[in-house]
Amino acid sequence: MAPLDWVVLGTYLSAMIGLAVWLSRGQETAEDYYVGGRNLPWWAVAVSTMATQTSANSFIGIPAYVALKDGGGLTWLQYELAVPLAMIVVMVFLIPFFREMKLVSVYEYLELRFDRPTRLVMSALFLISRGLATGVGVYASAVVVNVCLGLPIWACIVLIGAVTVFYDTLGGMAAVVWSDVIQMVILLGGLIACIVYALGEDGGFAEALGTLDPERLRGLDTGHGIGDGSTAPMWGFLIGGLVLYISYYGVDQSQAQRELSAPTTADTKRSLVFNGLARFPLTILYVLMGIAVGAAYLRSPELQAAVPEDHLDYLVPVFVLQRLPPGLTGLIFAAILSAAMSSLDSALNSLSAATMRDFVEPYALDRPESTESTEAQQARLLRYGKITTVIWGIAMTGFAFFVGGISDTVVEGINKLGAFFYGPILAAFLTGILDRRARGPAMIAGVTAGIGINVVLWLALDGVLYWMWWNLSGLVVATLVTFIASRFMAPPAAEKLEGTTLSLSDIPRREKKWIPTYLFLVGYFVVILLVAGYSRELLSFLM
Image 1: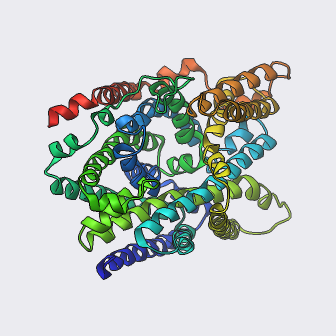
Image 2: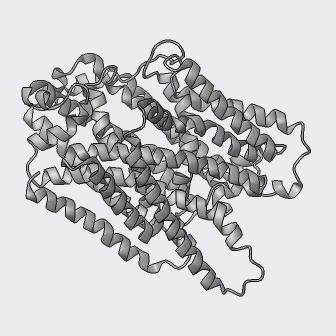
Image 3: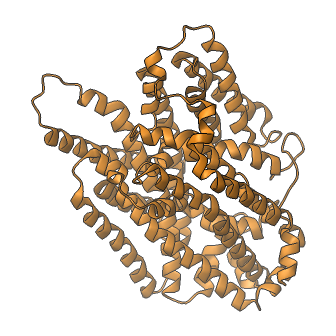
């Protein structure tokens, strides 16, 4: 890279650190630290939520999938099919409960509805699964940054980890949200710059489309992914993806915590609507970058020689290094670095919040003999929270150093942990909210069974059953086991049901003003389905 590119990168990193120092000034309580005092603008929360979905691997992996990888193409659009529908479920069944209870950790709900052991078990599941996945994510991001910057892997791990831990520890959720907003702007700028330069080089959009295999322009694979050999089945993405996104946006601490930082329930719903609408256009930008940069690759022997056949993900970094001018190269690599950091900062803050709120605060505050003032108590919890963030940051960064030496099978298993857990964890919350007979021990048994069936499906049917279906299988098994086991137990105490359960008959009255929005989201789902289904025809029309 040219000296100007390093200046751009240095300016970006300095800005992140300076922002965190500035935002840390107003922190007085743990609530300020973990949910921004519940006073962050809904639009900033929305942009931050969307930025978290965009990792460094997405920035370089999606275009390579669209343009070059076997079995790839515009079928990536199917990842977005279920998002608008999932937002409706989250807005109706989950967010109003968590907002009314003024939660910081969503697992607090499980103690209010069931008991403390249930809360601790579910929070521990989150900490283990998210912790392992984050460590792998840091390593994967470091590999990407290594290709871009040419630094050793260890230096990339330290760079990503140190800067993110520093600004996250100082600024808390406010730093996470506002840094994500900045990172999203940089990311969009990088995407658009790559598209413009690639299309300008190859004679425009029509020429780029004509270069690619027409089969890659098909956006919908109507397979189901249950023994049919489909590697991108529409029904797997739609049904399994619906469960995944409800769980991820609704009960995953890394996302729900951010949603709890907006001022009101209506603001939180606005942020979710924004994500339900904006994710698809962002994905289209990735697809366009894949078409443009992929066409440049197919027309250029130089690019083909520089991109190893076994590492097609190097396509975007190599294109940027070879074809973009100094300064702009630094901006795009800053975008890739920012994508890596936006994924890590949310994970760190949520890991710290769940640790503090579920495992430390209940015992740190339970000291009746203490004469400590409220202000001193909050200052102590704030200090503990920052220390916890540092500890998690060091742990994740340290674990990333070992990932390179772990077998590919183990890494693959860790990456699939989310699909093992999303369905069963969602079942825990939905049964608590909708089933007044559900009991904590039965729910733990159900979640264990749901995770267990997913592990069995992975070991026995890997390559036969598409992994997106694990979200549904985990949800169904966990729900059934919880329902049946609860019927063999005494009903819960009446006070455990007050304010923690929902009657379906109350929904129309409570959600009346939002019904037009929900109908619009359903219509938007139809639009996504049509765009994916007629992608070749739409692109041909644009030619």
